[in-house]
Length: 318
Length: 282
Image (cartoon, rainbow over all chains, first blue to last red; front, side, top):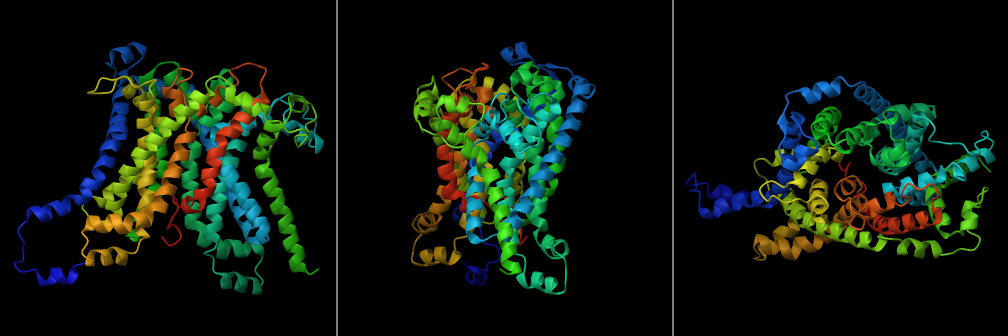
């Protein structure tokens, strides 16, 4: 605002630091202070605690006496020598790849479909997507439980009626693969609306003339998508992919509740379920902290891309 | 019919199919909630309730702890969102309207923190809340422990979104107010606040939904029945028994989803792109 006024009043060159100016300069710091304080107490301090716990023996007795016993790297060696950890890591990576891949591909296809349908169909689909988007995960889990029920779940009925085979009394939770496949359908279903609607918004940035010019030049639909559409929506797809990786790598609620406590076994662990069982269920918080750190480190690597991109945006639109 | 409209028709058919598949679970939840038990337990399902009944809904409401856990949820969510909005708004003003040293670091913090999966912090938060440093309190099993966690969970997102809404306000309006002789604070209250009110509502509704839906921390911290939140209540609805009251379960699910759906419909347009805003031009 006062650029001109400032230029005039530059003499004397250095204005004395008055109380008033110091107060004005501190306003933004006063404004962000409460958020900083809360995040320090509820995020930074626990992170520090996490590192400390990882080097301690910290079980139920220690929880009661509020005092752990320093054990060096014992927790990490124990976790890294645990076959279950490596199997779980591998399974979680595979699960993440499958879920992210399905979410991004199906979401993009849905967005492309939204462009092509009539307006009333587009409104219909959007309503459906928003409805799905707003379903609380725990509610969705219970609906899935009901739909995949062995005795009279509607999924078995539909598949049998449509002649996909005989699914009468089919148990969808019989094998770890099948269990995680059902979890995948639930996770992907819940994530699709966000991806589809965001990509649809990005598609509006694709220059119409360019698409038409390409079509007149005889480009096939796939070529138009690859050479015209994709470069425009690529930044959005990149962000959606990294966000989805983060979310899907940490899936807990759906896997934990859908598979259900008595059936949660090392053979179907995802990373966060493993963490929960090892740390909380077995009251071994030191080991759990070591697992958490290994998990957070993987996630931090995955998220670098997203953070850098968002940071650039934060600077641009100031 | 020419080629173009045939093609459109084809896409519309695909579109309707997609709608049916996506919306089916929601439809099935509501449909089951309204059916009689005979109809629910029949081996060949019927799509619509023949004689719609609301008895499952009254069963769900009268089921043990439903009301108390619903009240708990409202207490937790409203307090957490209230606190978070005040704090987030102040920080958002700093980000949108001031230049200051460390601003970039703060933005990095706000974005980076959102990347930390909550599950990674359950261990230290549990240990910390079991014995709060300095104060020496035990907040495990207390609603206040959950409130504290939810405040910090929705803060980063709220700061970032509110900042976006504040940036949308033309600087000229503020300056005009100041020329009129208002102080910065005066300009802020008279000009900025009314303009940003819709953004504030949208952000708090989104924070409300996030906290309402939260399961992991509520499940970790609140173990005593009747002192839990509604998602934990719903998760333990079946109680491990082999006979499941599907009608009651779906009715309860519907009841818990309704406020979220209504709120979400209101704010979805405003908020949907918060996470990727500016990505296209960036």
